[in-house]
Length: 169
Image 1 (cartoon, helix red, strand yellow):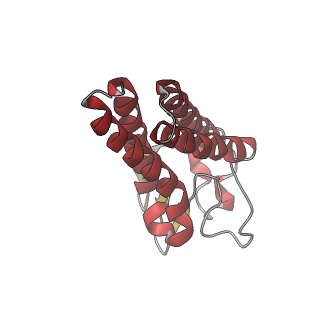
Image 2: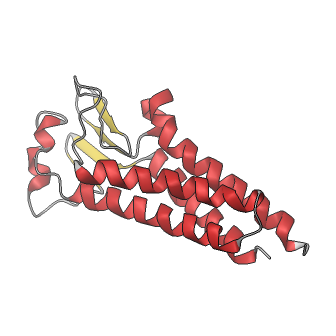
């Protein structure tokens, strides 16, 4: 075992656990674990990786549809695959997990960009479906929206996982 393997395993553990936490944090505290947030004049709405949002009456309603199911599942499976090299010396699992995590984040972004009914999240958001606003971040008085803490935790988890996979011996 080369001396890089210890560092690589630490990075893989941090990446895998942070990846899992980025998905689960929303269900602990929506403000902290949200992957997308919109601030309105009277209240905010937070969206999980699954496309469920805090202002919905139905806790299982996903506005991302297919992308809100497949994306987070890929990301969770990827986060678990990244942890496999701890128990079985295989660099391939780290790379496979990293690529699955990238696919999960990409599907979330595609799903977020394909939403056509932002009015169901908060009334008054219908202007987001037009051509002049980017859904990933922006503001229009009195609204502001953007990718949020859970999303950036997921991106950091991917970076840690890729670095750990590359330096793993």
